[in-house]
Amino acid sequence: MTDVDVIVVGAGLAGLSAARRLTAEGRAVRVLEARDRVAGRNHGGFLSNGTPVELGGQWIGPDQTAALDLVAELGLETFPSYDDGDAITVVDGRAVRYADETFGLDEESLAEVGRLWVAIETLAAGVDPAAPWEADGAADLDRHNVDTWVSANTGNTMARSFFRIIVPAVFSAETAELSFLHFLAYIRSGTSLAMLLTTRTGAQDSRVVGGTHLISERMAAELGESVRLGAVVRTITQDDEGVTVVYENADGSPGGAVTADEVIVAIPPTLAGRIRYLPALPSARDGLTQQIPAGSVIKVQVGYDRPFWREDGLSGFVISLDDAFNVVLDNSPQDASCGVLVGFLEGAHARTAERLSPAERRELVLGALVKYFGPEAATPFGYVEMDWCAEEFSRGCYGGRLGCGVWTQYGHALAAPVGRIHWAGAETASRWNGYMDGAIRSGRRAAEEILAPRA
Image (cartoon, rainbow, N blue to C red; front, side):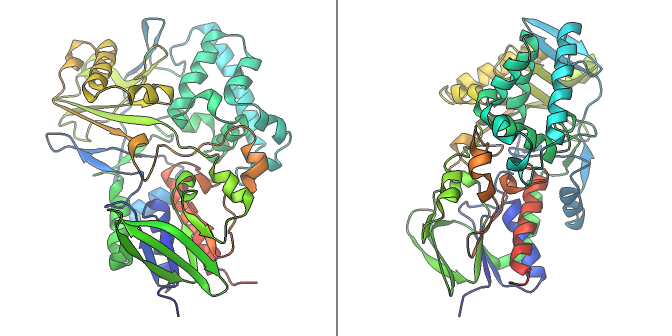
């Protein structure tokens, strides 16, 4: 006799979506979450004036129907991200304003970026994100990283620099750190490169009123006492009778054990690989988890008395090819009761900035904002940062990345169940991989694996 039907490890969007689906079908579920909160890589915070800000994932696109439908089911609302006015690209010490799709690039560089863009989209169209290793030429695509592919396909310095900016903006990792096949599969899972990079009608189209962490909090409230916080899973044992999950308390003291018929592990692969499995996992699955590191990102929210950049006809969107704090967007509340700029230190810049003191990071960030928006940016009323690399139960964001050779050698093990163990999480999604929508879909997929009649 087991304690419950299914144990879910992780109370982020994936784990809670799985638990919600299983509970709806009458299954008894226990969710074990290591943190003292739910929502995983979503996390809510506040500026000093009480304005809520998202310290983790925050945007939802119109094509992300799993997320949008769930938001509506839970009684939450969305509002459009601000995107009116000119954007800025900073390059070679110059700030170029633009209101079109040129990214502020010169004509020659723009043409070369466009040529590469079409080539990338064409290749991505031939990749099935559910099985990238089956694509034509997969081994060769997986042999390249993004940087070697871009460098081999253009000699235009600005075009190379452009992709070396947008890749960290999407993956919080450098172009040399991820397989070109992974890049293509990720693009295809999110529809197109344009969709991933666009605000209005794209992946950054809208925000959840009050913050995206509310999605998980409301699902957890529905599940009630089925969710246990501060339970750090250490061992998962499976045999013919079922599974036993042993956890310790967050302070390191002995916790307990829960038995079930099956278990869903809904945490990032790099963390899933730190659990001990008895019997040991197949070598392919174990090898996989050793090679999906999380990205490096420090997210910063800066509050001002008003969104003053709008008065100058600016949207707040900046990309800089010169600076470490190089992607910025307007993140003000819907009523514009104050102004908020959100920006990121990503990839190598995040790893360098981690070695600075908080005061030094703040100086770096505000210095960049003054460069972009003028002296008024030097005096915010609020400043909040979140270093996701320092989070014990994330170890980075936005998600895990696959380096060269990993998809073709180990990719088949990413979502494949191992006996009574099932895998969920944004990295396992074939649709909107790495995004909140993908996390929700992955949890539901894992739940359906359990609900399906056994052969």
